[in-house]
Length: 217
Image 1 (cartoon, rainbow, N blue to C red):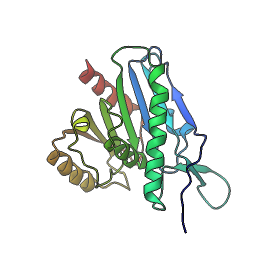
Image 2: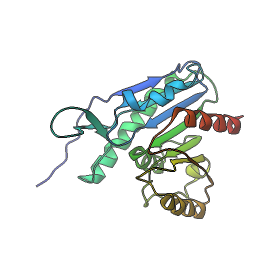
Image 3: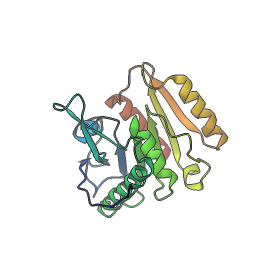
Image 4: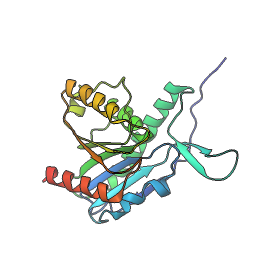
């Protein structure tokens, strides 16, 4: 008989910026096989005094090839799926609660960004309604199809989608299908296709930040 036993885990986070002065607070969820020392690198181009970026690492690490060498992290697999989802949601809630008291400025703008596999993780978390960021960024990933987007806290957020035109994993047709789902739910998702593969380039991130800052003013 299979049973479940909750246990404590030690999670790893990467951060960038000064929470005492930041006007923008980020939760950044990495893609499949990434580790946070590398996934946070594009965000290190953002001014430290204005942005506090926190990138939690998925709790499942594995060797990318064989049984040795480079290591990557994953948010979940299909095995014991529902328990995995509940664990990652509890984990991300705890990270958000860890960030909040560090922020000293009033009216801080919250941004949730998922890259690749992190898109599904971010959307599942937000659908639970325990965190309502001002901006939600889906970058080169596919949200789960079973998410209900007609919830008030999701309706109030500003939505963004970014995808490289040469991305081998996410065809443009998939994004167009998502646009129809979002539109039916009453969401307007500002979408941009850039030249490049399955990446999160620093320059494109800076352009996104500039767009968010214009909205936030």
